[in-house]
Each structure stands twice: as C-alpha cells, then as structure tokens.
Image (tube, rainbow, N blue to C red; front, side):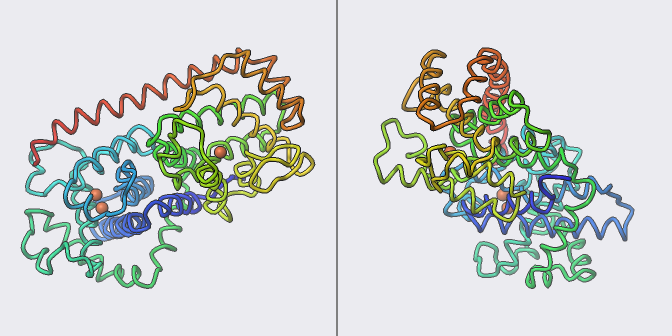
Length: 423
Ligand SMILES: [Fe+2]
Ligand SMILES: [Fe+2]
Ligand SMILES: [Fe+2]
C-alpha cells in the first residue's frame, strides 16, 4: 500500500503552491492540461507518438513550468514576472526540475517556455516540438483569462510563427474541437482528467517521492538553513527510528512525516525565518503557526499516520509543546522520535542566530530535556550511544546537497549570461 496516491501528490503541490500564490498554481494546472490534450490529440490522430511515461512527464512539466517563480519571496504580481523579466523564473524552474525532480532529463522544456518561436533557431534542443506546444499552451491560458489585458485580442493573428508556432495553434484548435478543452476548463472537469492521467502506473512510488522532495526543497530554497534543517530531520528521524526498531511501515511514515513537517513554513515571512535575534512574542506566534499550516495542507491528502507525525513534531511529553499540548500517552513512538530529530537538527545546525553547538553541549541539552520529561529518554540514550555515526553519515549527505545548491546558483549565473542574447 502506498502512503500517498498520485492524485494526492498533485493535490499537495496544488495546496502548497496555492498558499503562496493561487494564481500561479491555477495557471500551471491549466497550462499542463492544455498541453496534455494537445499531445493526446497528436497521439490519436497523427504520426506523433508519446509513451504513457512521456505524457505524464510532460504534463507534470506543464503544471510546474512556472515553479521558478517561487524563488522570489514576494510573488504578489504574477503578470509582472511573466511579462517583464522572463528569464529568471525560466532558468530557476529549469534548474529545480533538472536537479531535484524525477523528470530532470526533460526539464529543458521549461527553460525555453518563453522563447519566441522565431528564435528557436538560436538554440539546440531535442525537445523543440514540446517547447512549441508548452509555449502555446502557456499563452493560451493567459489569453483565455480575457480579463487579462496583457494579450491583445488579435494576438494570435498578429504573432503567428513569430512569438508562437502556427502549427501548435492549429493543433490546439483541432484538440479544442475534438475534446472541448475550454469547456472542461470552465466546468472544472479538467481536474478529474488530470487526476486520472496522474493515477497511471507511470506515476510510481519513487516518482511520487521525487516530486514531493522537489516541492519541499524548492520551497526551502529561499533559505539554505531550512533546506538543511529538513534534510537533517529526515535523516536523524530515520536513523533513530531504525535504532528503535520501528517497523517498515512506521519508518516509511516517519520518512514522509519528516520530509513534510515544516512545509507550513512557506507561509512564514523570511524576516522571521531568518531572524538573527530572539523572536518576540508576536513573531513567535507567527512562527508557531507553521504547524497549523502544515496541517491544512496535508489534511485529507496524506495517510493519517504521516499527517500526525508531521504535525506533532513540536509536542512535548509533559504537555508543554504545541500546537495541541499533547502528552506522552497521546504520542506514538514515531511521533516522539520526530520531536527528538527536530531538536537535534536545530541544535546541530548553524542558524542565523547561533553557531552550531558542540557534541557535548547538544547531548547536555538533550539529556536535560529527557530528564525533565520533555522528550523520550530511550531515544536520547540511543542517540548518545550512536552519536558519531549518525552525525557522520548526515554530514556526508549534507555535503552533496550543499554542493547541489551551489551548483544551481552557479549554473543560474552561467545560463543568465547566455540568455542575454535573447534580450
Ligand atoms: Fe513563465
Ligand atoms: Fe506561465
Ligand atoms: Fe517546526
């Protein structure tokens, strides 16, 4: 049995990104749907053939094509980003998808989604055809929102084979006639169709996990500490879970719960996340809200066991934690483990307001917490016994993640430079 169904992966992506900006999320889904219907038409009525995996991959790329916009802290005005400065989000989106998602080899499709059709001769790509379709689907959604004055009514007549591919537009019209795309968009039927597509076998367990990881790390990318914190919590929770001999099912739940536990931080402003001083009461209240936001996103979407692990990571055994103030008897071992992992990760990590603590200091604090009945004594004892090994393995993993982040930043600069020729 799987922890999470594929349509729910899409639902988590939708809810999470929707919290930051619902306009971009809807735009992504609609673009993905239009692209999908165009490919379906080609598959049925033309020589072009896509495998099931290709259909799913390209549709996901369509849904996520503007994911690079989430790099900006304030994505208030989508149209500004989408019309004035097109390259930053194209490049970040491409890099996130390339390095963090399971559709990495096809991510180039996103890199060029704003490139004018008559400039395609300037680039080399195996995916020119899909780029044409995605670019058209993207513009079509913008056009369908007629209230949006960015596209003039005669846009499609005026810029044929200049800004977009005429052949792609013809294909859209045929697909529209055959499937009633715009009608499905209006009555909401497109979501069911997307759900059916995404429930296909092509959406394997590993693939789903890959997209969730991509989502979490893309969101976390706004703050390096947050990325490392999530990574560390997952890692420590798994190690401690194994030492406590949790079952395979519990370990898997713990993995997902840890991965998703701070997802709600997307709604917390950066100045609080990255604060260099102690948070005042009001700021603390806002910070604590991340647990409820995580709950809002995951509720009814993930397995209840995963949800409860994720939202109980700040509970203490004596009832002094948040947000429910539960006690030891209400908390499962996995839920008690994630609380320990979260603290360990916070103490071990370097934060804007503190340096990393030494091993002695960390164990002193954690033993103190265990003695005062706040966190699980056995888990802390097994941490103490295996401390060096746990940290050493994590440090290795951390290096490769940090390397990846540096690589993304570096490549961003390189590609931006190259893209100057398109301005
Ligand atoms: Fe875009
Ligand atoms: Fe777009
Ligand atoms: Fe947290």
